[in-house]
Length: 389
Ligand SMILES: CCCCCCCCCCCCCC(=O)CSCCNC(=O)CCNC(=O)[C@H](O)C(C)(C)COP(=O)(O)OP(=O)(O)OC[C@H]1O[C@@H](n2cnc3c(N)ncnc32)[C@H](O)[C@@H]1OP(=O)(O)O
Ligand SMILES: CCOC(=O)c1cnc2ccc(OC)cc2c1SCCC#N
Image 1 (spheres, helix red, strand yellow):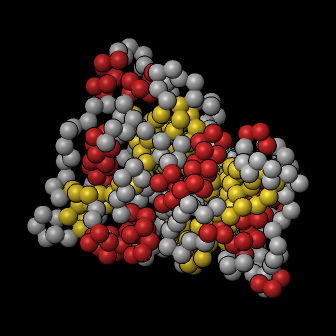
Image 2 (cartoon, rainbow, N blue to C red):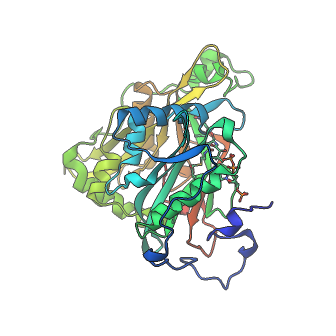
Image 3 (cartoon, rainbow, N blue to C red):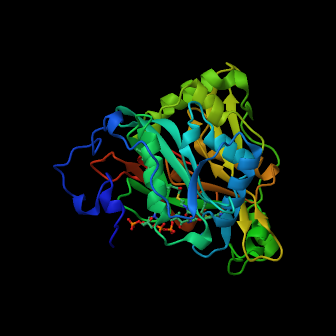
């Protein structure tokens, strides 16, 4: 498959696979800032760049509407991600964020927003190296402007703006195969509302299974099982940071989170992110942690339902409570919060609980990528400690 754009980029190329003489690390050295292109890339005549100020509610609504109608759909066009406005503001304004990395394309005449791409700064550890990176996300071109090679221009422009901040690496995921994944993960789904998933056509009644038997199969207790299981609160930030930093050490690629990062990414926010921990009733020490984020999807082509309420496993740490029991408690609280499904990737230690907690494998894959950073070997998904939104 020809990748006319990606073959020009400093990313692992398919032709290099197996070439063991290539060293791990940056593919190209940084450019002197004076040599970074100062002006934006050219867009086709009718379009202009706009920097999207996500503090502006009006701008947020425009971004929300573009993504709601034009962002990622599954292969069967059953669902389309429907990130909420408050989720987008959370995802795009972490500590140290750059407004200039929130990039839109407008139609000059109508001022209509027709494309979007974002970056946020992140410290990512790769083995023993801590690398300042940009996490690239929300690349979206309006359905009516597809296949016009706009995406490469969007990507080059965000790259240019990231370079201007003296950052030379990036991390991103995609459902499509590009040069070259550092690992490929599988989505797993745990039904919480099996009747709805059957109504919309995602799940089918098992052979020799009635609807009531199916509902019973996925039924969860009303209360969590772990003594000391409670919602995370602000005063927990230092202990959660210690717990998470220590746990993530075991993975080859993982975020290097400090207390400011933990405060932003893991302090509960309604309809955005939920975090729970286990505080030992005897010693009051924090022993375990689990979290999930809220990402609804529009249900395309269903008369009976318009929105799927989905929870996505985020970062989980088990040091005393078995991960199986901790995640079952996460399922219980997600069900109580009326989620229809709890999704998880097979990253970190997730595969140790997926089958036992009645997750089923999805047919979608998620490929992880690094930009301008070569890894000697493809990673197993269990060697990955990074979850992107
Ligand atoms: C140091 C800092 C570095 C920062 C930058 C790092 C890199 C960040 C990279 C971005 C990470 C984003 C992560 C992220 O947001 C999470 S993945 C979600 C991406 N968005 C969607 O799937 C939304 C629906 N689809 C669309 O809006 C369009 O189809 C898009 C815009 C996807 C492509 O628009 P289009 O109208 O369908 O296509 P053309 O304009 O004609 O362009 C075709 C070229 O684009 C390549 N392509 C297609 N999909 C891609 C994808 N998901 N990543 C990267 N490249 C992708 C494709 O291989 C081809 O190049 P090739 O000819 O070489 O094969
Ligand atoms: C019921 C299980 O499927 C999903 O939750 C879901 C929802 N919305 C999507 C929107 C776009 C989409 O494009 C890949 C997939 C989904 C999926 S499956 C993969 C995500 C997970 N887990």
